[in-house]
Image 1 (cartoon, rainbow, N blue to C red):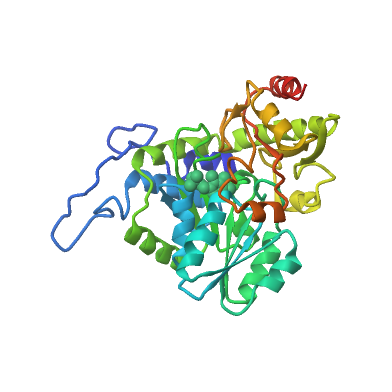
Image 2 (cartoon, rainbow, N blue to C red):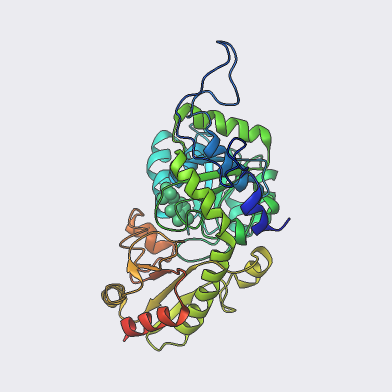
Length: 379
Ligand SMILES: *Cc1c(COP(=O)(O)O)cnc(C)c1O
């Protein structure tokens, strides 16, 4: 069956008792056992809950995995993967990654004795050079954030596996509707469900998806031991979000491409970063690796640096000045001051995140309205 059919039907069984077409939200924290040594499929909701499982089953199917695990946030999901490592192990990660991931790796894990190497992962040779004995995890993000770099997932999988390391891919910007990293050889996919999966700026959540059952068991053990699980109300909202994910992401991506093309023609705009533009360095790879669109995020730089950028982001009306992405409402922000404020300023500069870079998270509004809003702010 096609993606959008499975998004509606897999894992979302009607209620056997009432016939309700939407599975009920189970809020119970504990489940009665038939006897003291036996449990049903459920015993305590940190370990597993029916509403969370429904979302996990749908997502695992959509991502082409055997198991998904839902977390309280994207960072909780990322942290769970990091707990596979012990002091002395190495992570190779990208430079164009989410600011919170940068902080977790460089501030939290590095202080615990995990060695972190950051390279431009869109440069496959740089990844190959950085992976050395002791590398246990390669962590990539494609498209990257906020520069929209495209990383060759299959090439990174080969490099990681040759060294005995796992490849994990943060696919929050792509979503399973546009890229399914497990199909390209990744071992773990991470999603911030807060973004396109939820899709309406009304929940926090994260997820991991794997294609190896044994790795799924290890990660579930860690999730249960550490406890940052998704609650039932969020799981219900994520299941609901998945049903329209493909429609939303394709429509938002089409608008993002139109806006990127329009921005590239504006005299005040110095450069536009969007993988759907033929001039983007990752365009050819994005055409091979992505299906149905190039994502909902567009970044651009204008003349006049950060002062002028501030004026633009503070002048839009439809584009609301806020971090986050992937929801139905469009947002605008300055990564250096907002989403990527947790980077070292020096690291930010070194990886090419200019202080005046503006990032658009394109929502579901009409292109003409969004264009008019940007035109008036640029003016
Ligand atoms: C938001 C985000 C995260 C972190 O997810 P939270 O749900 O905010 O914890 C990780 N990666 C990317 C690309 C994100 O956009």
